[in-house]
Image (cartoon, rainbow, N blue to C red; front, side, top):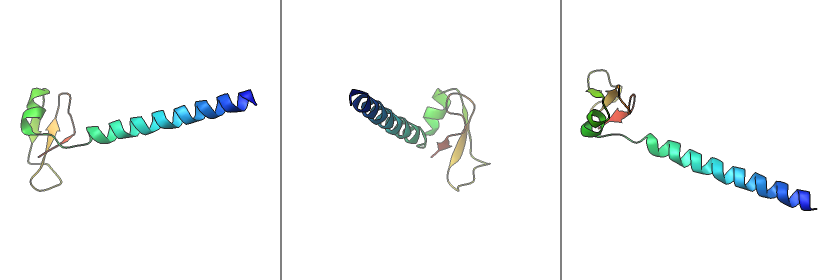
Length: 68
């Protein structure tokens, strides 16, 4: 019985930790301002964006993220 309770606690903890990581990944997918891109060491590429009115941060810590 004790082993089952411990195993259930471990599984529940792992599941909750996974949800936290999913939320963190979603938060990093938000778009940047041009200033945030350049402060991170990148440059904004407005010409090659697939969405009109947006750009892509090239290089730096935000490489590949959308810029509004």
